[in-house]
Length: 213
Image (cartoon, rainbow, N blue to C red; front, side, top):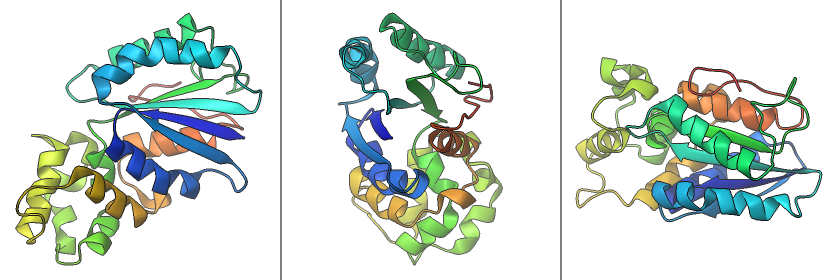
């Protein structure tokens, strides 16, 4: 099986190039295609999917990943589903028992950085001066509900340990932390839904935005 991952930016691409091989089956292949932000991805997605629909091999799947940000999660998923439908590509939500679909839509709640908070051991391995106890603080226990922005929260944690005082290099941070991540131990529910979706590309999977499909 081959997986085409469509993401909104280069930091997501950097993270998924490390994470996808840890989740997909041995022998599966993948590529990651980054857009210049969420707006561009959503704008260009319908035509991109229409392009795929004309030649997509039987054993290829498309995975679309976007950050929730401040959007309504279900409305955002509906927009992704609509883009696939307009291209004539069945989605995981449409399929029965996960069979016969071509597109899997997933949302990172609220941003990719919540997935990093979901694996505090990876954060500490990447940045050893960060105190492991940071993850026990109430504000970080549920990565998908961190208030005030997960990227800003990660910046505070790393700068508090003396890293990146001049500002976080987003791509480099994503690449470094994701290299240490263990997908099986992540506390972020949206990451677990993403992981189960990738695992289930051949065998079926459920869930997104606390709903199925």
